[in-house]
Length: 229
Image (tube, rainbow, N blue to C red; front, side, top):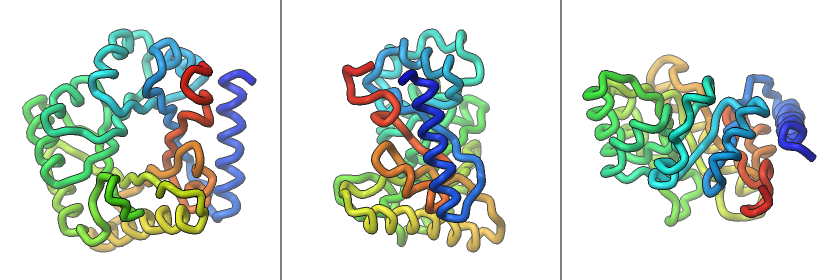
């Protein structure tokens, strides 16, 4: 099966899952190209993919020299961002989808102001409670709201990584928690300012779509395991 057909099949799965959950909004498809060669990014672009996700700054530096040839492709940083890598990250990426602390939001804001640029970001929430995961805790809503006040960054929504389990109930619980956190923040703001819910990866994107995801991050389900591309 070629890449375009695989994309269409996953998109059909997402639409079916949305229907089960009572949703019908557009879901952005983010191809996770980390650890894959630049040639695969070109294939994604040719197949109609509009966004790719990378999670390592050093790897991206080596891959991102030819993007002038791929207009319309959004480069999203989806990994843990160390504060000393913020400058390089903003030089290469269009969005940062993994802002996991107020300190990091302030650092991005300061650099974006220097660049006279507005940067779109997502706040990463640790909805599973797993200690190895980054992100705001569910009870840190005041810190999340402070991120929205930072100049030169636009918080469009929230991101989470599902729990490391095959238990569908636990996975669903984490995704429901992200949606509820977004809704609680919007209620505190008095407006539906936050719209994005980036949740769902290769193993759980259908559950995420059932619970209202607006972005899915797909790697293995799209390309197979590393070495099969």
